[in-house]
Amino acid sequence: MSDDFELETLALHTGIHRSQFNEHSEALYLTSSFVFDSAAQAAARFSGAEPGNIYSRFTNPTVTAFEERLAALEGAEACVATASGMSAILACVMGLLSAGDHVVASRSLFGATVSLFTNILKRFNIETTFVSATDIAAWEAAVKPNTKLLFIETPSNPLTEISDIAALAAVAKKAGAWLAVDNCFCSPALQRPLALGADLVIHSATKYLEGQGRVLGGAVLGKRDLVMEQGVFGFLRTAGPSLSPFNAWVILKGMETLKVRMEMHCANALQIARWLEAQPGVARVHYPGLPSHPQHALAQRQQKAGGGIVSFELKNGKEAAWRVVDSVRLISITANLGDTKSTLTHPATTTHARISQESRDAAGITDGLLRIAVGLEAIKDIKADLARGLNAS
Ligand SMILES: *Cc1c(COP(=O)(O)O)cnc(C)c1O
Image (cartoon, rainbow, N blue to C red; front, side, top):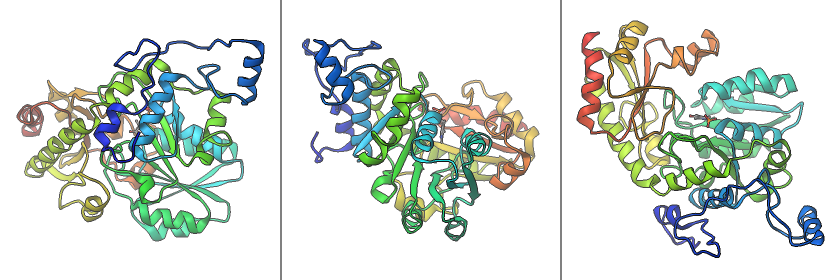
């Protein structure tokens, strides 16, 4: 596809390779393996002398379509699809790091990402130092001679802290390390980390890319030499956390509407954030689109809009937070985000319950904190649903 096309056009037309039937909508190739014309062709495919599909753990045309489309949206040379967002992070680490390597990671990461770095990778002698998402000097100080990877999520989950991608890319470059950005909250519709100097972009396609809460998926994007044969793809085709072609097909259809959905999620979230700030039971609202957000200026430079996630702290702690959760009738009480339907989560007792109280305190995840992933319902209906529990507290 031409570089001249805008994101919404690329999201509709990239990755389409029509079959002999000339279908208009993307075909779903639900097959585990591919047939060869001859013994010689099979040998040539396996040796890599002839390009082409062999087995869906390695490649599949529907999965390839997803990879080509996401690469176009992120402006990436290469994309490797994975079974979930977490397997994207795992494939990135296993593909690129070795025992004895060191990682510097943001303290404000998705709960399972923190667990992966602290509980699992540590057993394989990959050590991680956690630092503030926003303090560049702390990142510089944490770098060691064996630091290979800097890992951030911006905006962070659930507090929507903004890390300066360009500044951290400079720290990584000086350290001879790679900067990986989990771009889940923004999606390429709002933020393109590679253009700001990041080396790798991670996605949970489960969230906004798919957009309707149906399937899991993930991806790692970056330069071809980093993500293809020697790196992330090499791990994936051997170890197997590959994206199912069915899931790739569902996500491809979701990506077609990414831009219009993100615009609406952002517009609704900004209205909810402003409204929450005016509620007497609310102590604080975390939303990058609000002037009260500590990194509001950076967010305005780095992202097209504030995103769809709003976190807010109730004055009366866990009891008040649970009252809001237990009073909703429209909004779903669920941990997913990026869905067309609004979802509400109490991070301290769900997504971040398995990390220690100490880590939660350090990350600012208080017992009174709620996270709402604002959906596409009418704004009036979302407000009324939240107001019921807020007014009771
Ligand atoms: C959900 C999420 C992940 C993990 O993705 P899965 O598809 O659930 O494995 C990683 N990072 C962020 C920011 C997320 O919200």
